[in-house]
Amino acid sequence: MSAKHIERRSYLGGPYKVWIHSPDMFEKASAISNYMRFDCGLPVKLREFGILVMSRYWDAQFSWIAHVDKAVAAGIPQDVVDDLAAGKKPNFKADDERVYYNFAMELLTDHFVSDKTFNEARAIFGERTLVDLIGSVGYFSMLAMCLNAGEVDLKAGAKPPFADVSGYRKKA
Image (cartoon, rainbow, N blue to C red):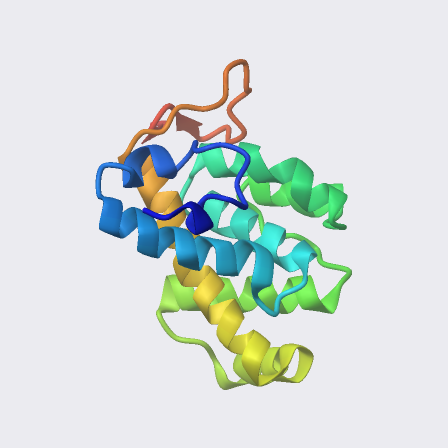
Protein backbone atom coordinates (compact mmCIF):
# COMPACT_ATOMS: atom_id res chain seq x y z
CA MET A 1 0.00 0.00 0.00
CA SER A 2 1.33 3.38 -0.87
CA ALA A 3 1.66 6.48 1.27
CA LYS A 4 -0.56 8.45 -1.13
CA HIS A 5 -3.55 6.39 0.00
CA ILE A 6 -3.09 7.17 3.68
CA GLU A 7 -1.64 10.67 3.59
CA ARG A 8 -5.09 12.33 3.82
CA ARG A 9 -5.94 10.36 6.95
CA SER A 10 -4.81 11.30 10.43
CA TYR A 11 -4.85 7.69 11.64
CA LEU A 12 -5.57 4.16 10.43
CA GLY A 13 -8.68 3.17 12.30
CA GLY A 14 -12.16 2.02 11.41
CA PRO A 15 -12.31 -0.07 8.24
CA TYR A 16 -8.55 0.18 7.74
CA LYS A 17 -8.16 -2.16 10.72
CA VAL A 18 -9.96 -4.75 8.58
CA TRP A 19 -8.59 -3.88 5.14
CA ILE A 20 -4.96 -3.94 6.32
CA HIS A 21 -5.16 -7.75 6.23
CA SER A 22 -5.59 -7.55 2.45
CA PRO A 23 -3.07 -5.01 1.10
CA ASP A 24 -4.58 -5.02 -2.41
CA MET A 25 -8.08 -4.41 -1.04
CA PHE A 26 -6.66 -1.75 1.28
CA GLU A 27 -5.04 0.13 -1.60
CA LYS A 28 -8.08 0.02 -3.89
CA ALA A 29 -10.64 0.75 -1.16
CA SER A 30 -8.50 3.59 0.16
CA ALA A 31 -8.41 5.24 -3.27
CA ILE A 32 -12.20 5.20 -3.62
CA SER A 33 -12.55 6.24 0.02
CA ASN A 34 -10.41 9.30 -0.60
CA TYR A 35 -12.43 10.16 -3.70
CA MET A 36 -15.79 9.81 -1.93
CA ARG A 37 -14.70 11.64 1.22
CA PHE A 38 -12.65 14.45 -0.31
CA ASP A 39 -13.06 14.85 -4.07
CA CYS A 40 -16.46 13.74 -5.36
CA GLY A 41 -19.01 16.20 -6.70
CA LEU A 42 -21.32 15.98 -3.69
CA PRO A 43 -20.98 18.89 -1.26
CA VAL A 44 -19.36 18.00 2.06
CA LYS A 45 -22.74 18.27 3.78
CA LEU A 46 -24.16 15.49 1.60
CA ARG A 47 -21.03 13.33 1.85
CA GLU A 48 -21.36 13.35 5.62
CA PHE A 49 -25.14 12.95 5.40
CA GLY A 50 -24.68 9.97 3.09
CA ILE A 51 -22.39 8.31 5.62
CA LEU A 52 -25.10 8.75 8.26
CA VAL A 53 -27.85 7.40 5.99
CA MET A 54 -25.84 4.28 5.17
CA SER A 55 -24.62 3.93 8.76
CA ARG A 56 -28.20 3.86 9.98
CA TYR A 57 -29.44 1.60 7.20
CA TRP A 58 -26.69 -0.94 7.98
CA ASP A 59 -26.66 -0.24 11.77
CA ALA A 60 -22.96 0.69 11.55
CA GLN A 61 -22.47 2.42 14.86
CA PHE A 62 -18.74 3.07 14.40
CA SER A 63 -19.17 5.16 11.25
CA TRP A 64 -22.17 6.97 12.75
CA ILE A 65 -20.16 8.02 15.78
CA ALA A 66 -17.17 8.98 13.61
CA HIS A 67 -19.28 11.22 11.34
CA VAL A 68 -22.32 12.54 13.20
CA ASP A 69 -20.55 15.64 14.50
CA LYS A 70 -19.03 16.27 11.06
CA ALA A 71 -22.49 16.06 9.48
CA VAL A 72 -23.97 18.57 11.92
CA ALA A 73 -20.97 20.89 11.49
CA ALA A 74 -21.43 20.66 7.70
CA GLY A 75 -25.06 21.77 7.99
CA ILE A 76 -27.26 18.72 8.55
CA PRO A 77 -29.94 19.82 11.04
CA GLN A 78 -30.01 18.09 14.42
CA ASP A 79 -33.66 17.06 13.99
CA VAL A 80 -32.73 15.22 10.78
CA VAL A 81 -29.88 13.47 12.61
CA ASP A 82 -32.16 12.54 15.52
CA ASP A 83 -34.83 11.11 13.19
CA LEU A 84 -32.23 9.06 11.31
CA ALA A 85 -30.80 7.69 14.57
CA ALA A 86 -34.32 6.70 15.64
CA GLY A 87 -34.86 4.89 12.34
CA LYS A 88 -37.47 7.38 11.13
CA LYS A 89 -37.67 9.19 7.82
CA PRO A 90 -36.74 12.79 8.58
CA ASN A 91 -38.95 15.77 7.82
CA PHE A 92 -36.55 17.48 5.43
CA LYS A 93 -36.40 21.21 4.92
CA ALA A 94 -33.62 21.04 2.29
CA ASP A 95 -34.37 19.52 -1.11
CA ASP A 96 -30.85 18.17 -1.61
CA GLU A 97 -31.05 16.18 1.63
CA ARG A 98 -34.55 14.91 0.85
CA VAL A 99 -33.62 13.82 -2.67
CA TYR A 100 -30.36 12.18 -1.55
CA TYR A 101 -32.26 10.27 1.14
CA ASN A 102 -35.12 9.20 -1.14
CA PHE A 103 -32.69 8.12 -3.88
CA ALA A 104 -30.55 6.11 -1.46
CA MET A 105 -33.49 4.45 0.28
CA GLU A 106 -35.20 3.49 -2.97
CA LEU A 107 -31.95 2.02 -4.25
CA LEU A 108 -31.28 0.12 -1.00
CA THR A 109 -34.79 -1.16 -0.34
CA ASP A 110 -36.24 -1.56 -3.85
CA HIS A 111 -32.95 -2.09 -5.73
CA PHE A 112 -34.19 0.45 -8.26
CA VAL A 113 -34.96 4.16 -8.33
CA SER A 114 -38.24 5.57 -9.60
CA ASP A 115 -38.20 7.86 -12.63
CA LYS A 116 -39.52 10.67 -10.44
CA THR A 117 -36.69 10.36 -7.92
CA PHE A 118 -34.04 9.85 -10.60
CA ASN A 119 -35.15 12.92 -12.54
CA GLU A 120 -35.36 15.01 -9.38
CA ALA A 121 -31.82 13.96 -8.44
CA ARG A 122 -30.51 14.72 -11.93
CA ALA A 123 -32.14 18.17 -11.84
CA ILE A 124 -30.59 19.01 -8.45
CA PHE A 125 -27.17 17.39 -8.83
CA GLY A 126 -26.46 17.17 -12.56
CA GLU A 127 -25.15 14.08 -14.35
CA ARG A 128 -21.65 13.85 -12.80
CA THR A 129 -22.74 14.39 -9.22
CA LEU A 130 -25.66 12.01 -9.69
CA VAL A 131 -23.12 9.31 -10.57
CA ASP A 132 -21.16 10.27 -7.44
CA LEU A 133 -24.37 9.98 -5.40
CA ILE A 134 -24.89 6.43 -6.73
CA GLY A 135 -21.25 5.61 -5.96
CA SER A 136 -21.58 7.04 -2.45
CA VAL A 137 -24.50 4.73 -1.68
CA GLY A 138 -22.39 1.76 -2.76
CA TYR A 139 -19.16 2.81 -1.12
CA PHE A 140 -20.67 3.96 2.18
CA SER A 141 -22.68 0.69 2.29
CA MET A 142 -19.50 -1.33 1.72
CA LEU A 143 -17.84 0.67 4.48
CA ALA A 144 -20.69 -0.02 6.91
CA MET A 145 -20.71 -3.73 6.10
CA CYS A 146 -16.94 -3.92 6.61
CA LEU A 147 -17.19 -2.23 10.01
CA ASN A 148 -20.00 -4.53 11.14
CA ALA A 149 -18.58 -7.79 9.78
CA GLY A 150 -15.13 -6.90 11.12
CA GLU A 151 -16.72 -5.92 14.44
CA VAL A 152 -14.70 -2.73 14.63
CA ASP A 153 -15.10 -1.44 18.17
CA LEU A 154 -16.71 1.87 18.99
CA LYS A 155 -14.41 4.59 20.20
CA ALA A 156 -13.66 4.28 23.91
CA GLY A 157 -16.43 5.86 25.96
CA ALA A 158 -18.73 6.35 22.97
CA LYS A 159 -22.42 5.88 23.66
CA PRO A 160 -24.07 3.49 21.17
CA PRO A 161 -26.26 5.67 18.93
CA PHE A 162 -29.06 3.27 18.00
CA ALA A 163 -31.62 2.09 20.55
CA ASP A 164 -32.39 -1.07 18.56
CA VAL A 165 -28.76 -2.27 18.26
CA SER A 166 -26.58 -3.83 20.93
CA GLY A 167 -22.98 -4.57 20.03
CA TYR A 168 -23.17 -6.17 16.60
CA ARG A 169 -26.72 -7.47 16.83
CA LYS A 170 -30.26 -6.15 16.57
CA LYS A 171 -32.08 -6.20 19.88
CA ALA A 172 -34.99 -8.60 20.12
